[in-house]
Image (cartoon, rainbow, N blue to C red):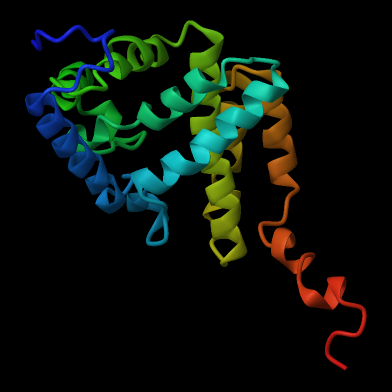
Length: 211
C-alpha cells in the first residue's frame, strides 16, 4: 500500500507523478475496450470510454431532477464507475452468469500509488455499495445509456431494440432507482435520435435557405 496520505491531494512526489502518468495511459486504453454486449449487438456499439462520457451527463441530469446538489461527487463517480474494466474488461449479462471478476483487486491495483487513490477508497466504493442517492443516480445513468444506444441502433436499421423491449421494461420498472430516471426512460422510448440536428439545420432556421 502507498504510504502517502490519500487525503493529502497536493503532495505530488516523483514516484506518484510516474504512477499518475501510467494511470492516464491505462484509462486511455478504454477507448479500445468494447463493451461485451457487442457479442449480441454487432458492430457500432460505444466503447467503454464513449459510454462513460454520456453516463456523466446523464448522471448530472438525473441529479438535478432529483435535487441532488453535490455535482462534483456525481461527476467523479460517473467517471470512475467503469474504470476497472481497463483491467477486467467488460462482461455482458450472459457471461456474468459464468464468471467472477475481482473488481476490488482491479480497483486497488489501478489506483495504487496515484494521486487519485481517494477516488477508489471513497467514490468508487460508495458507487459499488449502491446505498447512497449519488450511487443510485450514477447507476441509473449507467443503465439508461443502454436505452439511448438502442434507439440509435434502431435508427440505423437494427431490430435488436424491439427484441429487447421486454427486458428493458424490467430494467425500467425494477432496476431504476429514481423517479427522474424513469421519466427519462419513458421519453427515450418516444424520442428521435436525429431530431436535434434536423430541427437545427438551415432549412428550418434560415428563411430563404436554398433560394
